[in-house]
Image 1 (cartoon, helix red, strand yellow):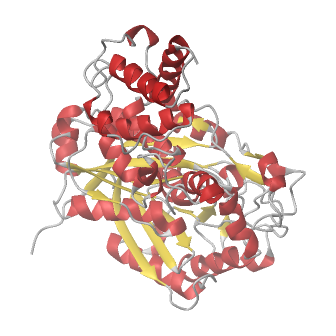
Image 2 (cartoon, chains in turn red, cyan):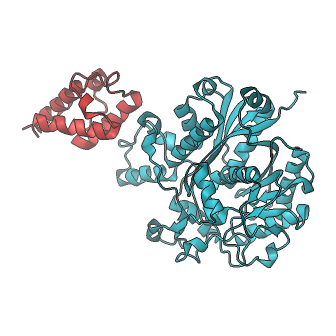
Length: 87
Length: 412
C-alpha cells in the first residue's frame, strides 16, 4: 500500500464507523474535541483498524498517545512500515 | 401512612407494526387492517414452521444521534422514539427530564437476540473476543431499553426494567403507577419494547403455540377467540405512556388522557407455560379491588388473547367468571400480532384512545367464535358506546399475570 492508500483507508473506515463528516477529517483534527469521539469509540477504533489492516495493535502503548487524526495516520503507517507492508 | 396520589396519563407514544406514532397505530386499528406479513428470513430456519410476523417499517434509526444509538438495538430505538413522542405530547422538556422527578420503567422480554447472535456468529469462527465492540453489552443487557432511553433523553430519576415476558409492558405501567402514587416520582415514562427475531417465533413454535397454518394468507392470522385460531404471530414495537401525578398535571395545565386507577400482578405457580383461568381471574379481581370498582363499572376489556388454543379459552373463562357476558371484550392481536413486551403498553394506549373516542376496536379475524370462548361479549365490529373505564390484561409465560384499570378523566 502507498501512504495515501493507507490514509484513505483509515479515513473511510473511521468515517463509516463513526459517521464522521469527511470535511472535518483533517490531519490536525483532534479526535475527541473536533471529531467527537470518546473512550468507547477508541476501543472500537482499534477493532476497526485491526479489521481494515489485518494487524494487532490493541496492546501497543502508542495508541494511548493518539490525539489527532494525523497521529492515527502516522501510527498505522509506521506499523505497516515496520511490517514491510508499505510500498 | 403515606397518602396515595392520583395518577393520570399525559402523554402517549408508539412505534408499532402500523408505523411511527399513535396516530398511525390508531388509523390501522380503526381501519381494521392487518400488519402481519410473510417474512422470507424465516424460511431459512430449519424446523421453524411459522413464516409470518408483524414488523415495524419506516423507522430511520439515524434520527437518534450516533453516540446515543451506538448502544441501541432496534428495541431501544423504538423505545426512544416512542418516549420522545410521549414527552412531546405531555409538553415536557429538558427541565423535567433532568429534574430527578421523572423516572423510567421500560421492559423487554430479553436483551437483543440479534446482537447476541451477531456476536456469537463471529465468536465461534475462532473463539476470539478481539472483534467484540465496546457497545455490545449495552444492547444485550436486560435493561437495555430503559437505560438507553435515560441516556438519550437525559433522564435523571429512577430506572426500572421489569422483564416478565409478555407481561413486561403491563407491569411497567403498573410499577410506574405505584412510583407516582407513592410520591417517589412525579412523572414516569412507562412501557415496553421488543424487536423481532426468528428465535422469538421459534420459542412459541416449539411449544406448538405459534400460528403455522396461515403462512400463505398472513392477514388471516392470528385469530383471537376464533374457532380456526392456531397460535401466536410475533410482532415488534414499543408502547410508552407518560404517567404523572394528578396535582402536577393540573398545575401544568396538561391535557389529561386518562387516569390509572388499578393494577395487580400475580404469579401462577401451577405451570410455567400453561395458562390458568383461576389465576387470571384472581389477577383481574385484585385489579378491580385496587381500583375500588365493581365489575359492572368496567365498560371494556382489552384482552391479552394471543390466539393460542389454551390461552384464549382460559382468558374467556376468567372474564366470564367475573363479568359474565355483558362487558365488551376485544383483542388487538389480530391487527398487530403479539408485540411481546410492547403489547401491554401499545394495546393499553390504544384502549385509552378508544375511551377518548367512545369507540371500540373489534377483534380482527374473529369470524366464528370458538364455542369454548363464547361465554363473553365479543366486539365484532366498530362500536360507538359510552366508555368510562377499561381493564387491560396481559398474561405471560413464566406464570406472570398482570392487569390494569384506566378511567376517563374527569369521570362521574
